[in-house]
Image (cartoon, each protein chain N blue to C red):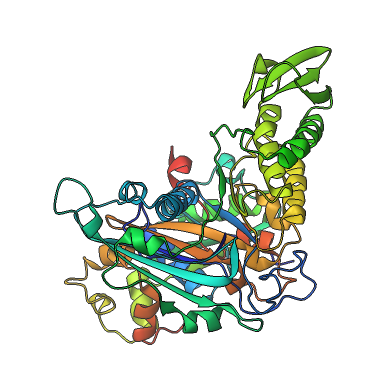
Length: 143
Length: 369
């Protein structure tokens, strides 16, 4: 029986990317995705109530923050919860945009979706209906 | 009526929507026997479609769209489909491949293009209709028949003349809040209805002692409960508050089940009728519906009950509706479980729990509340 996974990601853009990687490209371990910034917010027991026994948690977060104290606290908290299997960390160096530049054949994030500016990228990404095609067009590699 | 494919554009909330209801390869040891057109084993269509998805993804609306198209075809009136068009300033269209119950050796395709109305309402000239058909030979598959389709209406024919070329067909839709009447049941259907009603109601509430047909009041049944008699006329139970919500919904379910047992309509759309009913009971009744579904018939079954995923049904029976928001644009699409799970041993339940199909509802806002 495959294991259960729950992703917690920083923002909607990360969630959109993970859904494309999970469903359209089937290149990551599938799991439910929730937007929760584990670097800035603390987990509560109530938030974890809906998880089934031995659910593995994956925390996706940016590393462009100066303070990791809440993240450490969250990891300790999650590790002590009976419904949690393993806790995995997926740090983005430094953030989603930098990771996409690293994994695609682009030098600026605006190139991925032909956005007008780098700051338009996130909006364009969330509106994009063809993320898989855009990633493949720019030689995206999960490795 | 067997629905094989439907495409909708600018129809309610459906834009560039496509639902396919055939499957390409024979499934060995399938729990749904003879899942193909009678005497045409290569013509494989989905007899059962378990339609799932988050709230407001279009499960009920799809049923409404189908009713409108069926009414348009049989009543030859533009009104039903005119009411479905979302943006009347834009063109709208639908396309449907189907087989009627009365003529199972013919496959039809109807393609309708509806232009924005030039006057205050839609008129005959706003709709352009193409009807194609082909004979289904003994060895034909759906795919082969699609390649053989030929237009049968003349270019100058009106849509009414064109629709005259299609045989009549029946259908039965049951919605969560609809009150389904047993008045339309045939004498044979009515005979089975009393037995089915009694069986379903007693299963839902063991304190029900029996159901009998009223001798004094037409179209009425007497439900005996704890030495009280409850009168059910048409579909209204007098003093029904002494029955549980689930028991009351058993009446509609009995109408649906009786219709299937009597092969009354051929096409059935059972939309979330089990909200008040125990999961085991829902599974048992769905199993019975499938077992009693006759040759050349089709059942749509919509539900939120994840336990239905554990039933031993072919994976291709499960279709998920997904609504995605891209800026100001909504898009509803179908996700077919068999496109992701290739082996029958793959756990559909676990796939849904891990949201492989990205169809889980977004609960982030609730979490943040």
